Image (cartoon, rainbow, N blue to C red; front, side):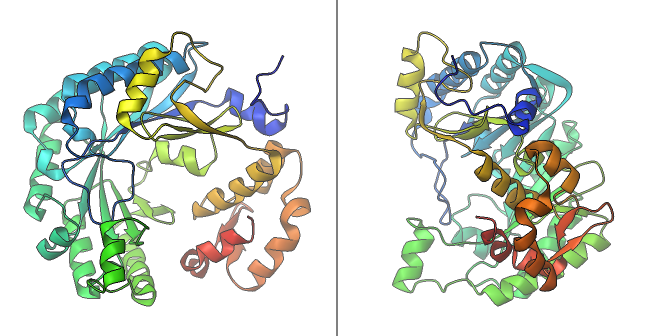
Length: 403
């Protein structure tokens, strides 16, 4: 008997069953909430870190109880994973290795706030197997960092990178924000140049969006800060695209650039619509044709996992409070939307047909034709469908066509 969330045996589901997993582990603790942040994070909960990490290790064991499935990456996201003692991180990685067949060259990323880059902790993390750091730089300007309620300075970022290099890390990513309220083109240019001076292997930057319920949302509604300027943000993006290309970085996704061979394997799993487990409070996952979300509050997450006696059908645990079976039409649409974010790789017609048993032209030909005529989509060197440079600026308009 199929379990109630199983989909039919389409080529898509057969491929998902065979594909290695990516593991996302959510750490929902922070010292402060950034003014732009809408993530599932909590302050003043340090007393929960130890029981939470114990519950996370138990959830790893429960969800992987049926078989040692291969896994290609582990990503400690948040929140602020660098608030967690390194011994807890090491024990959690051991739980991943005990439960899943973690590949020898698995990418293991930890998000790091610059002010928490302790040399001893960095050495311990590297020894435990963490081999990639994602550092939340955001800006090189003190006034912007204050506006964001960040606790670090740019000097902290510089020191964090130096200490990470000394600890043996040779894969460092820096995150930046552009298009923010009061940010000028010159400020953005100075921040990006400051990031490049640190010679990271990877750079991500994101146009600031004011999300409902955030501090920025309240400030914008009261007139304390202006709304972001989309035209200025587009100019910032185009300028940065040229600068990073000149600096030897390959743009592999709309918001991500990497040195050759340093694209994030974990994030590629999302954009290729391959399976990943989202574990921890409020985490989202997608495996076995099911999208999942765990309970938000860490106290309830801990209680649910501690109370679970037996494994449930993969990929479910008692912490999962929302499930959505992904039907074939939805999977095809998501393959288009996520795949087109990969600006070089795009969507391969051959891979699409292998995955879904139908040609790309037969499913989306009528939708694609006007987008190509408008100069938003093009054929790549290998016949893949991809966004043009102009299409990257208007990506949301392109994606809406496939919803």
